Image 1 (cartoon, rainbow, N blue to C red):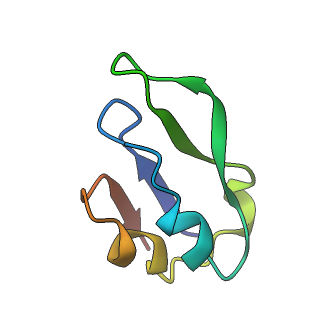
Image 2: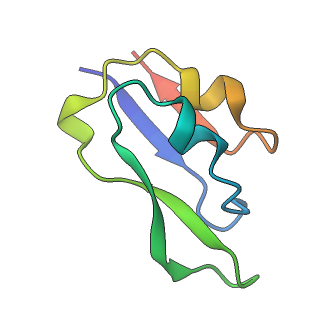
Length: 67
């Protein structure tokens, strides 16, 4: 099983990773970080296959995927 970590405080909520995820397990949170951005969160960590499409598409490099 893969482990995905998103730096909520650095995420700007652009949503590119949400669109890139083939398993559709990422979503924009209802909560904002200290900068006022609605960050991305993982909705189902168990379904992550570790493809790293989210990390590759993130322009701010705030996603880390461990296989």
